[in-house]
Length: 321
Ligand SMILES: [Zn+2]
View 1 (cartoon, rainbow, N blue to C red):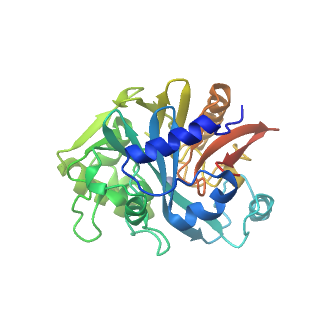
View 2 (cartoon, rainbow, N blue to C red; view 1 turned 90 degrees about the vertical axis):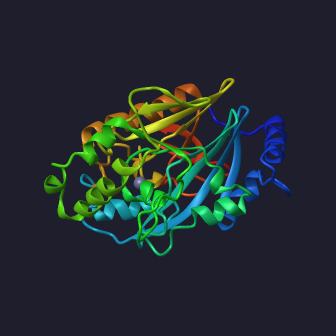
View 3 (cartoon, rainbow, N blue to C red; view 1 turned 180 degrees about the vertical axis):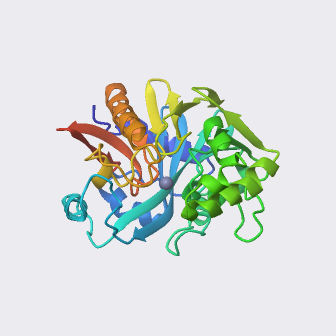
C-alpha cells in the first residue's frame, strides 16, 4: 500500500498545527516538501489523531572505509549511493528525531547528537524551536539504543548535565543492562570504551530513567517494539491512532539507498549482524503488510514515508517524493 495524504488528512494536519499552537501555513505540499524540509529543519505529519514532527539534527559525511559494509565492496557501495541519487564521495549519514503529541503527552523519540558528534549536526533543539515546539515541555524521551547519535542529546557536552531533567527517559531494559554492566568496559573495543564510560557515569545516576522490556505501552498510542541486532537491546516504537500506524524504526536500517535497497548488507555498526538482518526484513515486511508509515533515524529528510518491496529488497519513499 502506498500512503498518500488525502485532503482530509492535510486538513487534519493543519488543525493539528493549530492544536500545537503553531502559527503560519503548514507545509504539506508533497512537491515542495523535499526541497524545503531540510532547510526549515522539521516536517509535520499526522498518524490518525496523533501529531508527529520529524526534526532534522544534521548530517555526518562519513569518509569511505573498505570495511564499512561487511558483505559489500566499496565499489558496490558507491554504485548503490549513485543509484539512489546521492553523491558517492562519502556516506551521507543524516540524523532525524521524531517528536509526538499524543493523549496530552509530549514525546521525543531519540535525543540527537547534542552537537557532540559531527560539526554539521546538532541542530535538533534549534529546529524544535523553529517548529514552535518547546524542549522544556517534553514529558517523555524514548530511546531506541545507546549509540552516541541517539543519546548524546540527553547530556551536556562538558558536564553531562541532563538536557531533559523533567522528562521520564524510557530505555530498553536489555540495552540498559548491557551498557551499565561494570564488567563491560574492558570487553568493549577501544573505540567504544569512552561511550561505555559515559553511559555508566550518567544513566545509573539519573532518577528519571525507566527501563522497559518486550512490547509495552510507553505513552498513549505508543508501544515499544523490540528489534534487536543493531545493538543488544535496539528497540523500535509503534504508534497507532484509529487504523493508522507509524513505526519509528530507529537504526533498523541505515542509509536507505544502501540498507533498505539491500537489506542483507551488514554495516559495521550492527553488533549482531545476522539478528539485525532478520529483524530488518521482518520489520519492513510488517510495515508493508500493515500499510504503516515508517520513520528511520538515518533515512535522510524528511525521514518518514512508505516502504515498498522491490525484488529482494525494498524502496523507501519519503513524504513528498
Ligand atoms: Zn544511529
